[in-house]
Image (cartoon, rainbow, N blue to C red; front, side, top):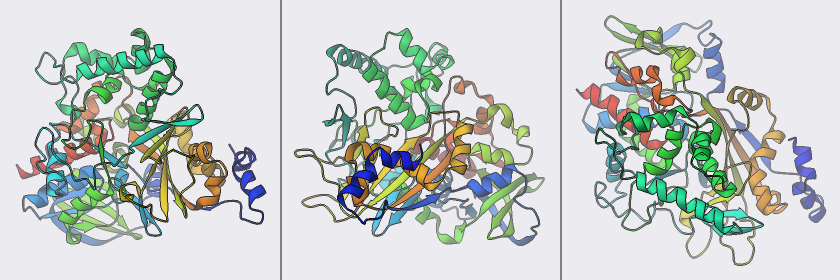
Length: 530
């Protein structure tokens, strides 16, 4: 939808009639991290006309600074291993990146960390080191109140009003509530179920889940098909389940593996002694806070800003070419960790097929996303008796709602300024078509989509209070666990590689969450440490 049509729908038109003479809207800034270098790699022009102008020799090269690469470097540094260099890539921190608008930090990627499962050793180790838990390996640690999400945690805009929590219940018929409870009761019972191999059916990290063939067969059908087969038809339940799939996978029910859909609800068993089981850890800048802690351990002397454009395995080690400010730097290493998305690795790693990975059939489908940060000079007025929550979702909205960057600061009084971060999983079309639209869409068109949920709630007040909007477009934001993803022999081969090249990225799980990325980075470091 063009912004003109959006404005005519009532948002800025209401503002114009109330505040004549004011500008039509806030300043809009767009960011497309990684798009230019990604397209240059795809079109084989990343190194055109460039010569090598620098050399680096090291034992280990970590190629990528998302959570997997950071975890690998952090783990090595913890063990006193310092003969490595970490290449940051086109966007340091990857999906844990952040921004700052004025004096307010805000996320441009993921914004929370669920309570870690018992099996998430890397995450629990990190939280212990950050002193965010009294005993990070206890069954129910006491978490630092500054990071444990404050009340009110979430609310849902439904039938013209707010209700507590995101699961729909206001104005929902009793038979739909009963169906919701039936589904949640079933998935709760799965949390303690184990397969024939003795492992939990659904675990985080995913690699530790049971391989019981009877349960793995669920991966051959879509979540939508499984739900219909088991009599789940309530519109409110189906909307919520699709919201969850879009939130974690970037896909709708029809394009999500049934195994992955159940894993979403049955895998998490983290608890807190001072919070509910559905509590999360969050910071103003989202997951950039734990990511920065990891980077601090690595130190600037071990980092190299730039984008990897070629990796070649040699007889005596690995050679990597890094594009840095219009020049090429060659890294000579004994071993390398490929900590980048697999669709990038397919263009960077020479002869990646030799590792058992065929890019044409094994590259996971990646979902496009949009994250928009709305800088608010003042908080929009809420209706009498309604309290702004950390996570605010619109029932059947175009987006996934919005979170409040300053929520953890709010005590007796609100700060004067804040940032609302709106999230959109662009699952409304084929990923390739959506990416093409993102590459060409103008600021007005993108703003109309980014503001849709906020406009539904605040109307013309949104434009009155917003001074600037930063929109971050992620064409390949996350891998999606589509039906059949568990049978991907290519990603399995990369996960098992233990030669000069090691692979570490959440793409190996087809599930882009902090715990999965940290697991693969930790595994790579373990192999490097022997």
